Every structure is written in C-alpha cells, then in structure tokens.
Length: 239
Ligand SMILES: Nc1ncnc2c1ncn2[C@@H]1O[C@H](COP(=O)(O)OP(=O)(O)OP(=O)(O)O)[C@@H](O)[C@H]1O
Ligand SMILES: Nc1ccn([C@H]2C[C@H](O)[C@@H](COP(=O)(O)O)O2)c(=O)n1
Image (cartoon, rainbow, N blue to C red; front, side):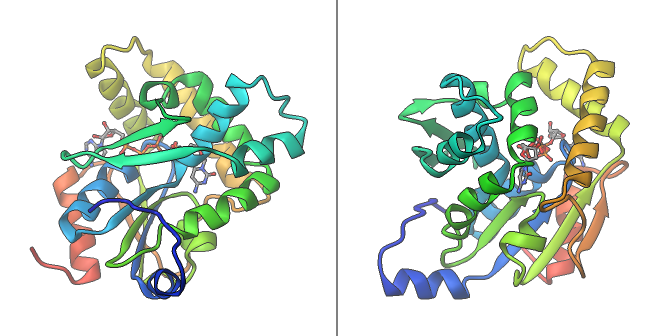
C-alpha cells in the first residue's frame, strides 16, 4: 500500500476521519517498527513511523546547527520538514529529507539522542501533530510510536502496547547493528535504552504509557511471528 499522505479536499477528509487505525506504541527497540510493517503489509494498510518524524526533526536541527534552546527555531524545523516516505516492495520505507535518502543518518546515535530531546518539546509535538493525522487514509493505518493511542489517534479501533526487557532490546539492537556492519557495544546500547526510556516515560508532554484498553504484548521471550499472531487474534483478523 503506497503512503500517499495527501490532503485533497472533502473526500480525503472523510476518508481520514473514518479510516480504521491500529496503534502500536512502546519503548525503543521493542519491535514496533518491525511488527507495524508486517501488520500494514498483511492488512494492506498505510504505515506511519512517527519516530522517523522526530528523527527527521533532529537531523534538520543538527544539519542546520539550530540551537535546541531556541524552541521557536526547532518547532519551525519540525513544521517545515520537506519529507517523502517511499514504500519499497519489501515493506521497508525509503525516507527522503529535502530529496536526499537519509535512512542511515536517521539511525545514528547522535540522531537518536537529539530525537529524544526534541520530542520532549511541546511545540515540536504540536508541529508534528497535523502531519501525523494526515496519514490516516483509506483503507486504514498502522501507526507506530509512543503516543499514537494516547494523543494522536485516541479514537483508534485497536491499540497495542509492545514491550520487552531493556536487556533483550539491547541484545536485539546489537544484533541488528552488527548485521548492518555497524560497530556496537551492548552495555553502551543498554545504557542508552535505559536513559531514553526514562526520558520518554517521565516527560510532561505525551509520556510513554500504554493507552487505556491497550493490548499489552511483552515480546521478551516470543518470536516476531508469535507477536504478529497475538495481535491478529486480538483484532480478530485471520490470514
Ligand atoms: N519478538 C522478536 N524477536 C526477535 N527479534 C525481534 C523481535 N521483535 C523485534 N525484533 C528485532 O529487534 C530489533 C529492533 O526492532 P525494531 O527496530 O522494530 O524496534 P522499534 O521498537 O521500532 O525501535 P525504535 O523505537 O528504536 O524505532 C530488530 O532487529 C527486530 O528484527
Ligand atoms: N510518537 C513518538 C515517536 C517517537 N518519539 C520519540 C522517541 C524517541 O526518543 C525518538 C525516536 O523514536 P524511534 O524512532 O526510536 O521510535 O522520538 C516520540 O516521542 N513520540
């Protein structure tokens, strides 16, 4: 399903308001991206990787040397992001910022750190809110992030909260990075995960908490296929 993310008149608005949404929230490295991509592909739904929008804002701040104390400038960077998500055949998304593929830069440590900081700024979250809502289009949307079920799509049809222990998440992230040929250290990754969890959970605006009524899945000891199956059972979908 292509992610057109357009906003062209009243039909588009109707489609936005009524299209079903499945939200998948959870901490860093819990598998949200992987699981959301599989759900979206199998259901033929659009996909919103909201973390990418915070990472893109961070990248824009870093590239343009914006002072993070200058809230207005950081919020402007978020509002004016020139970004295109290009769905690929394998379900992955190519992310273009100002026409340039920034897939690798988005995942660098420096970007993750900055993303976590800009995400705590209420003006940045406000700037990205409407952009996120526009992803809601027929036939449906799978939205991955921290506040999809609590703030962005509170009326979502199904809400999932995915989690796993910090140690398991660090191990999985380590494996993922090594497979990509990126040098990584497990204890450094674990420290970063614990620090970001703390920042995401304790910030005053849109903190990371399970939405009311969310189906909570702890994937620490279960496979990706088992997580997908549990979610399909929850939403009542059979392949
Ligand atoms: N249940 C699972 N069993 C084994 N590996 C898993 C499982 N779920 C996810 N993974 C692996 O963990 C790694 C991190 O997953 P993913 O990138 O989807 O997490 P995320 O929550 O989207 O992270 P972030 O918030 O940082 O974007 C990936 O390599 C993924 O394949
Ligand atoms: N809805 C969201 C999505 C992401 N964030 C924050 C959390 C992380 O610090 C950063 C990058 O997210 P990731 O790509 O790791 O999922 O953005 C958020 O606050 N709200």
